[in-house]
Amino acid sequence: MEIQSKGPSTKGPADMFTGDVWFDVIAAGQPPSQLRVNVVRFSPGAHTAWHRHANGQTLHVTEGVGLVQSRGGEVTEIRPGDTIYTPPGEWHWHGAAPDTFMTHLAMWESLTEGQPGPETEWAEHAIDETGSQVTGFTAGDLVVAPFVWSDGTCDFCREGLQTSCRHGGNWARGGIDGGQGEAVRVPQAQGTLVKLPVVEDSALLPSLLSLSDVFPTGYHCAVTAGVNPRTTVTVIGDGAVGLSAVLSAKRLGAERIILMGRHKDRTDLGLEFGATDVIAERGEEGIAKVRELTGGVAPARAYIDTLLPDILDGIIEPGRVFDRTVTLDGVPAGYQAMADREALKVLIKP
Image (cartoon, rainbow, N blue to C red; front, side, top):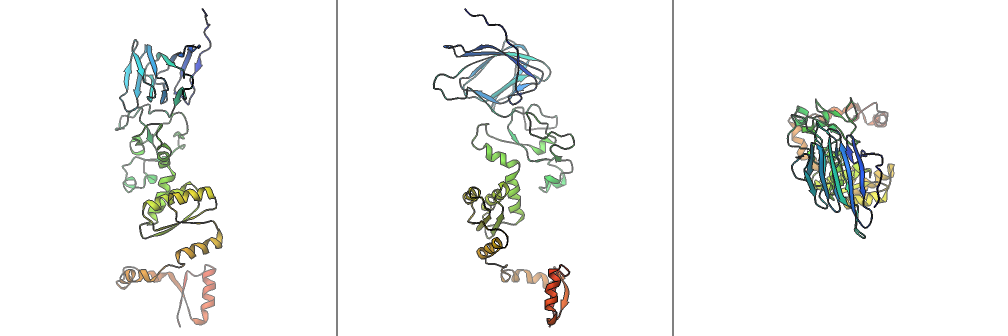
């Protein structure tokens, strides 16, 4: 027989728990036993992050009122005397109700010899609580948030300009959380968050994360540039946004996508994303390469028939760009004036 004295209590780390959580190790799986037992004490509202156990877990509530949820299931209240079993590999979280402490025993088995790990796998934190005006979200949902928050209802939001929301703002300003911590308060959650129909270990998670910033930014570039199946596109830069612009241009059906970049690992990814050509040269040499691939100057003849009626009908007056008139003798001076930015465009009158 071996009697072990109680050791010091351990505070739950912030990457695994939200709020104040303390635990004591009761059994650490002395061979040949694989049993592990902890006493875990949660302060009001504190809880675990999403996690799963390779060999399952059993909880037994000894004090207080708690909450538990499995991925895709309802949040369930648990009370003293309740025993909760979570099967191997099932994502779940558990913790105290918002207004009371809760203590439970946590029991699970360590890995057997040769069994692949980890013994316990931790993922992101769950939604703690939603405001009274937030609908469609529940504690435990996996969500994505863009790099600005917005209400989704103002006139700008309705036009797809959430970055100019009258009631929105940026993270880490004006007392709003920065978003890079174990928990964050999301203002205007109803208009900001998008619920994701996947689990934490989904292979899609990195791509879904890109929806918070770089992919929509690249897509915005392609959309505002008017990319369509008839267009040739040049993307300058092989960073994350540039590569996202390549992917977006491909999605919008661009006929030819030229990527300008000098990092081969990145431009190789750009080719996988849909780039048809890569130009590593910069400056004037790079410009010359683009012109070589695209046929140089704009094909004005292709647009004359479309634009002529608007000019004849007085709908548009593009001739206003000519702000200086010279004779043939004044051509050199006219070019110099444009080069010096003294004239916008010079009209030559014989």
